[in-house]
Image (tube, rainbow, N blue to C red; front, side):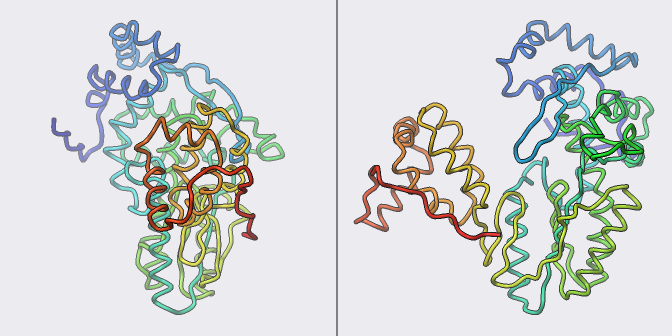
Amino acid sequence: MTQKRPNKSGPTFDEVVNLYNIQRAVMAAAKGKFKRPDVAAYYAKDITHIYNLYLALYNGTYTPHQYERFYLTEPKKREVLAAPFLDRVVHQLIIANIFIPYFVPRFSPHTYACLKDRGVHSATDHLNGIIHDSLEDGGEWYIVKLDIFKFFYSIDRNIMLAWVKRIVHDPKLIKLIDLCIHTDQSGEYNMKEIWGMEHEDSRKKGIPIGNVTSQYLANIYLHPLDMYITRKLLPDLGLPREYFVRYMDDFIVLVKGKRSAQEVFGKVKDFAENRLKLRLNPKSQIIRLDSKTSFAFCGYMFKQGQILISRKNKYTLRKLRRVSDADDWSVRFPAWYGHAGHCANAWQYSRPFLLHNPAFHIWLRKYPKSRLVKQLDQDQAKNPNRHNTASPSATLPEEDNEP
């Protein structure tokens, strides 16, 4: 089935809200969660629930339900508001029929995070590519490394809705999106705890981190900043638009010359504060780029033209040494390697740990076609005298002195 081309005048309510789209939204929201009680209960009478949701949306009587609150401590402590399943269906409806067809095509190609085929690995590959290009070009290059302070908590919901209205003109759809942005539950963050003091605009700021719509809304909110950097700042400096990469609220601009780097830093800071009501994280900095430069981005270390394992990922691997249960290990380690395996030194660093962990050998027998098995075979072919057997005296590589 060919996808209908988006209407140039923006989406209409009847195009978005219909039984077919709601059914697809239910499937998207339930993907991988069919064993959860709330999802199972919904599917037990899915036809009835779909029709009732359609009537509520059509008649304008739909209201979001109470969010579930909890805290995440990794990579840092943050409050998460998780929506009930019915609300997640509405979120998927908005994403599939409004955000993806009408907003995503307008995004900069160098914007990553929560976009199809534009995840963390694509972002790091792009960054590593432009670093290689600049080093080969010669001259004095600088990395303008920027980060938004308390980004999701700082988003001004009125400004957000104003950006949305530039594309969406249907009053019913605007009201529906407005519910995702301005609903009371989304504004009930503990702003005193977050900011360290009472914030004057606390009731106007913040969108729920747990909502899948928030990931798209965050990209929409920063889209004007992307355009300002790629269509104004970089061309004015005679640099290609590709010398920019953003992953959610972390972004890097590659600039030639220290004065130009300072100019970009100052102009981006002014744009963020004046147009978007955002503050840069004090950790934002300008780094001179050379063969010895090392810096972190998207959970990786960039050093000497290579993507390397970060100190935090090394620490996580060391904690996994204490995991002896094969089932627990078979979940936690592949998740770690799925991220760290993108690094040039992933196998070199993790090999001693793998070969001398009994849970790993149990896992190998369970998944004989794993890419780690292929890596072991290649390693053995290159080093025939090296034995891939267990030894109780094995240790992980010593921690290096990364910044």
